[in-house]
Each structure stands twice: as C-alpha cells, then as structure tokens.
Image 1: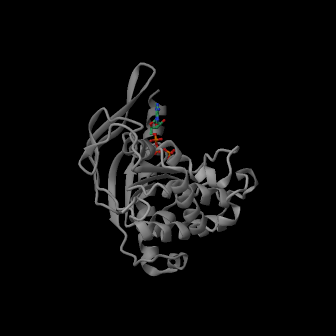
Image 2: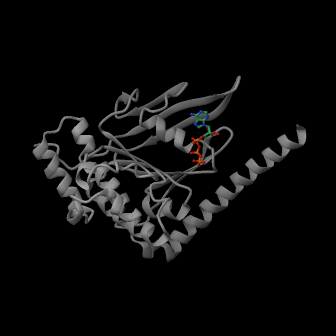
Length: 275
Ligand SMILES: Nc1ncnc2c1ncn2[C@@H]1O[C@H](COP(=O)(O)OP(=O)(O)OP(=O)(O)O)[C@@H](O)[C@H]1O
C-alpha cells in the first residue's frame, strides 16, 4: 500500500520537563518552565494563553525548529532533533509561492521529498478536489481570495499525509465568515485522517470548537495551568457555539484566562513601580 492510500495516523507527542530560555542581551529570560504534556495519538489539542507565554515556542519545539535547553520533546519514541516530513506546519500567513500555480504550490513538499511527477500530480489534484479548488489548479495564486489561499495552504499541508500537524493561528488573517467556514472545513478534513494536531490560538471559541482538549498556559515563565477535556460530540459544527455545554466551557476558560492575564498585568505594574 502506498502512502497515498494510507490514512494518516497520528503519533503521540510528549514534552517531559521542558525548560527553555531565550538570551536577551546578557541575560537568559525564562520562557518555558517544567512544561510536561502527553498528547495521545490523533488527539486535537489547542494551546491558549496570554501573549508571550511560550505557545509558539512549544509548537516550534515539536517541529524541531527550537531545541529545549532542558528536558525532551518526543514524537512517538523519537526525540525531536530536526524537522521531519511526518510533521507539517500551517501558519496565519499562508506563505504560498506567488510565481507558482495553485497545483504546484500544493506539490512543493512532495517535490522536495522526491515524489515522482505522476504521483505528485495525482495527490495534489485529489487534495484540490477535497478543498474545492480543482477548477483553479492552473491558476496563479495571486488571483485567489484570502480564504482560497488558505485552502491551498491546507491542501499543501495535508497532502503530505503528516502524522503531526502544527498550526499557529492559521485562521487569524481571515474575516469572521470565511474563518467560520474554514474551521468547519478543516475539522471535517482532520476527522477523515486524524493526524495529531497542536493548534495555537488566541480565540477561545475556536479552541473549544476544534479540540479534544485545551491547554491553558500562564506566562513569565510559560507553564501549564489548566488542562481541559472538551467532550462535545463529533462531528462538530458552528451551531454548537450556542449550546449550554459549549458556553460553560467558554465561561470556565475565559475566567481562568482573565485571571492569568490580570496576574501578568499586576507583575508588570510592580516591576515598573520598583524601577
Ligand atoms: N527567537 C527568540 N529570541 C528571543 N526571544 C524570543 C524568541 N522567540 C520568542 N522569544 C520570546 O519568548 C517569549 C515567548 O514567545 P512565544 O512566541 O513562544 O509566545 P506566544 O505565547 O506564542 O506569544 P503570542 O501569543 O504573542 O504569539 C516572548 O517573550 C518572546 O519575546
């Protein structure tokens, strides 16, 4: 069976006692402290928290872009030490190459990994059908709307059949209506193949709607302060936002987030008073 025919299966992701700091001038500023998290295969996990708490740093470590100063990050049994073809990224900026057509943007990772031309084309076209852009395969990406561009980016990410997908505010640049459509579309694409997902967002409703589990981080240094299972049934839809269970998750998370943001504000005020 080729990789094209195999449904992607998620891999376990484990962070064990990860500590990290970035050097600013002559001092090390702690970013993550004792960050420990076990994500079972195929779980969809969102990370939320105040700006600067280390969400993107944790995500980048999973992708092998940042290496922890202490502790380990594993995918399956292997410690992450570099980027891998099993791990795909999706960001707010779609990073499509403007000089390439829609199809050849979707083919790019397969090209890098040496997949032959015929298979590349078949896989790209299959994904363009799934994101409803098959009519635009030959088009120039510059002529697409922002929502269509993000669908090309989703196809480019999922065409690799990754076992892990790392998403950093992927829908943040879209208007509210397009964003709602893309969230729903992404959930159904994910439900078909179920790679493990880590999804970073500032939008609590988005986190609840998409995830099996929401991790709330606090800052200075970044650590986990809440780990909430979201037990809404699947398939999920936008209408669920109005339901009592959804609202209760939202109230709980927003109270806890507000509390964390207030603590950061108070700490900053104290530092200012002292200096
Ligand atoms: N390459 C880097 N060099 C130095 N400092 C960095 C670097 N990357 C991140 N930082 C700092 O580490 C902290 C955590 O950054 P990170 O981007 O992980 O936070 P975040 O929670 O994703 O923030 P946001 O929600 O604003 O995107 C911030 O204070 C940031 O300034």
